[in-house]
Image (tube, rainbow, N blue to C red; front, side, top):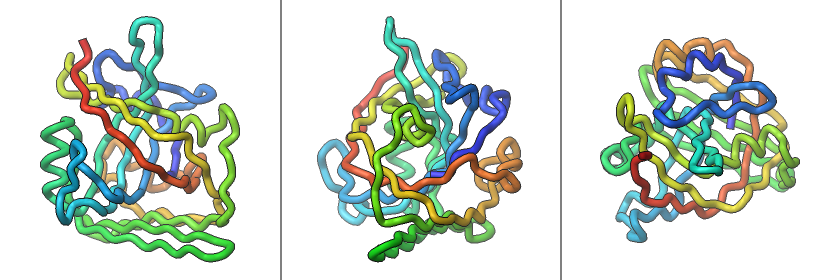
Length: 223
């Protein structure tokens, strides 16, 4: 997860109705995230040849007031996966912004270090890689990693006044201390001119999290 401070004005056109931007210590963030789906099931049913695959996404953070409760969630600018059926189903069911690209990944698990790398092809091969210590640690309470990972709702802008909402369930993750990273991504080609500044931007933080089982609940539209 590579996390960049961004001008909130850039994100306002992407903001779903009935949500507002969520800030951490007065800063607005957008995150480049690479991970593996493993043993994936659709409504409890495994789909042959579509259970294990890479995803890279760019997302930002919002909140929605439901009565007296603030729900903290994420909005995806785009999610890149290697299989067209996944894009078709995700866009149809959740109204998301999936795109299919050639992808690969590299994981090296050593005694002292971990190396994780994701690659995807546009007109060039993009790369996001990290090297981390092999000793997991707890996230500090109210830290930036906790803010980035502790959002349990997904919101999608379906129209000017229409927003879909779905729940995401997973335990609190642990992280690995970062030793180094490389980000070679054409942000404009992948995500549009609004995000071209990220080509030269330095992330506010980069970290590797230990994933877990995740449940994505079937959602509905906000009233």
